[in-house]
Amino acid sequence: MRKLLLVGLLLVSGTLLAANPRVKVETSAGDFVLELYPDKAPKTVENFLRYVSEGFYDGTVFHRVIDGFMIQGGGFSLKEGKLERKPTHEPIHNEADNGLSNARGTIAMARTSQPDSATAQFFINLADNGFLDFKDKTRRGWGYAVFGKVVEGMDTVARIGKLTTTARPGGMRNVPIEPPVIRHMVLLTPPPGEEAPAEAKPAATGHQPAPMPGMPQSPQVIPGMPQSLHQAMPGMPQPPRGIPGMPQSPQAIPGMPQSLHQAMPGMPQAPQGIPSMPQGPQSLPGIPADPTAGVPTHD
Image 1 (cartoon, rainbow, N blue to C red):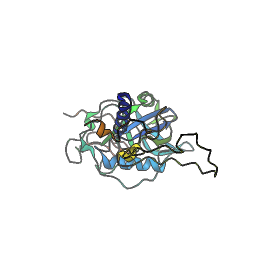
Image 2 (cartoon, rainbow, N blue to C red; image 1 turned 120 degrees about the vertical axis):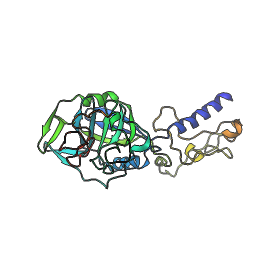
Image 3 (cartoon, rainbow, N blue to C red; image 1 turned 30 degrees about the vertical axis):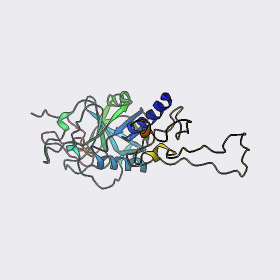
Image 4 (cartoon, helix red, strand yellow; image 1 turned 45 degrees about the vertical axis):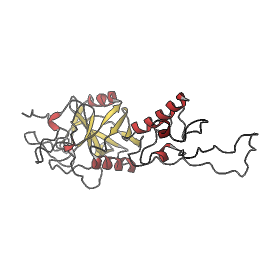
């Protein structure tokens, strides 16, 4: 009985721990997984997931790479050997004042010198870049909004950071000679407050096998026990699909109580080409202008 109760608690705990959405980024250089923080940067995460769901990032490249600093992508695709900018949605509000730091492995939005100019481009920090953090609500002090971090595959990100780069026509610098392509991004865990898409039910065949003697024709539901975890906990995401041995819904267990609660009563100079947002040749105060973008700025 105690073992069964423990299993039930673990299932619920696993659901609670899956609160932050995760996105798998599949690239030509390898894959990595991002965990996003909607509680810290709700608008930024919503914006990023919008582009993910639209397939916007599929086919884009990491167009700016600076070893020991950051890798930047999400704004250009490569066509016939030329970088082509992709049209985006409207810019979003800068949420850099959320208390998160541009530490190694974190992902933040690139932008122009205007604080509220981020659209689709992002960068991943290859080092602790505290000088990019929010300092005050001025054009110079706003910083760059962190909204998640790499939780798997940081070796892939670091490998991209070491690629040989060159300059491209139009003033773009620090461009990999062979830019890594983002093949696809997929949402692994739904955002808080949303449910994963329901599994399609098989079509009825019109013939049902006869039940075994004494065996009910369908699983019985314990009174008061929800038929699935997401029903038991409104707004909580389901565990990631495909976990070996993980049932899709709680099974009726003889002797199990009807519900669990009854069972248990001087700022350093930034390196050139700082992830300036590639929307136009922007630059941070005191940093050489980069026609390709501004400190994590849009190109």
